[in-house]
Length: 485
Image 1 (cartoon, rainbow, N blue to C red):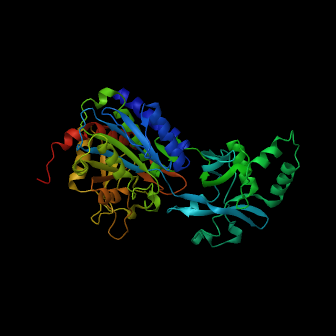
Image 2 (cartoon, rainbow, N blue to C red):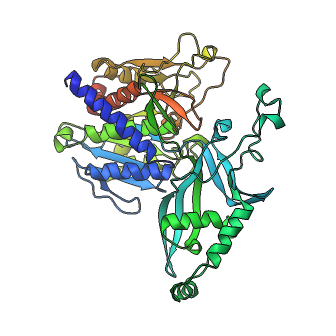
Image 3 (tube, one colour):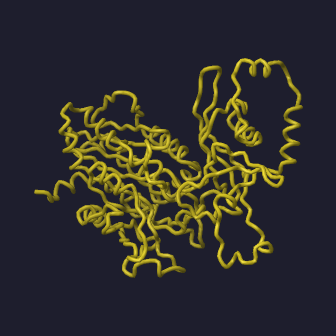
């Protein structure tokens, strides 16, 4: 590919990522966006509730809980027992999730009760223009219910800081009490009551609403402010009483953007880990864009985007669940009844656990090991940990590094300091749970787990190109490597 063509393609990837980020305030929306991209590219949706009738040379995907999505393309030369080349990432990010009873009234204000999800930098949520997004269960008639995604676009909430005049020592050390301080303000009580009075005494055009009320059972909505429910109902095109339940979270309304004096950075929420989710998904879509791209493929190419990584992955749709094993099993069993071939396939498979990495911070350089200081624009980071907090070993890092060398792509290494605890990823969970060879990698970023994070444009391009090359070349490269012989 010519250099000019690579530049145009790289810019398209960045632009597409920005659109993906701005359309994905929650894990549910991220899965919905991924589903749209896959369908537009010709992938066929299958259901875990059905038996699968799969064909070599075809592309498929399924969702679980609508917050985890797995997509795969079967090579035309695939036979049962051949391996899977997989990239795994996650759809969730630290955030504030609304409580089951979110109605809070204090000091003349309507507030929204929230729970902290994951390990967020919670002080960054103060003085941000917030809204809500997520999914809602809606009553449709007497006995039917639907599942809909919702997002209120405009800012409706805020968590205001306390004025320095009332806390003179705040700059000596601000410690957030996540229970009492981290409660968004929705409205003042008096304005909400005035709005309620206007709504209740508004004109009634016909008896249709009364009839509808008599026909449908009402939902007990005393758990949430009626103002919030009305905002949701207006957005969804239903009545507040039709809202049966929801999973909502607070979201920043500031859009993702390419920024910096040289337009070299991306400023956005949820880069961890929607950046890796998008880059891997787009790489697989483009690496399987036509039947000819799978003509010589002997294995199965797969992307698995899991929910609940930020809280340990222990859920029905997290990486700690059987979802990965179930997918490998379902695909293999679609072509054979010999159960032993699944074990062989797993040993021939490879997982790239893709989760954002810690770039060197110029103001805190002592937080990195002297010889392991990943930098923005430096390419994907291979993560190592002797205690298996990352699943990388010499063989798996070699495979990933070799693909980079062949395509002249930069690669970096990260090891946490010995005097600091090390984070982890879905890599060790899947490596130990499924028994699959794994390398842990990620694009470098700053401000990880802040409401507003920062990464580099070049690393989005490097990530996409590296993942795409991996999908195209793993099967041939792996055939040249011998270890357990």
